[in-house]
Length: 198
Image (tube, helix red, strand yellow):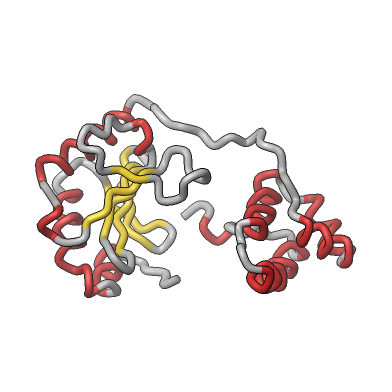
């Protein structure tokens, strides 16, 4: 994943969606939101809180509403890009610049800003138990230092590793993921530490 430092760098890196991204950026810049870059992509905030992100993917450009599940989706345009994983985040996909209806997008953004100002948010469930998949359990059993380090991680970081392995469909993918994460676990790092405090 490319780590862009500015919104303009991000646009330069996605020429295939340049027109759509510029249009959406200009629309977001016309609001009271402050632009920044988080997790390598454009993010728009208010009072330091994430409201909406801008992104380009293989077949579409889109907006990410961080508390999108709370929006009254009157036009039925928002999708959960990771069903069963994300509670709050919702995405609005645009396959061409013609799909972007300014008045409608501005209304959604305005509602998202208002929700953030009111402090409305869906918080992650931090009490959910950690279910260690058999592949990770076996790898930890074989590596004493990884097992000891894993036990010192927070439940959230343990869950990230457990989910990362269990979500892989193929055994070969699970094995390659285990090879990647075991040194990280030994070092006491979380799977997504590099994205925290962005």
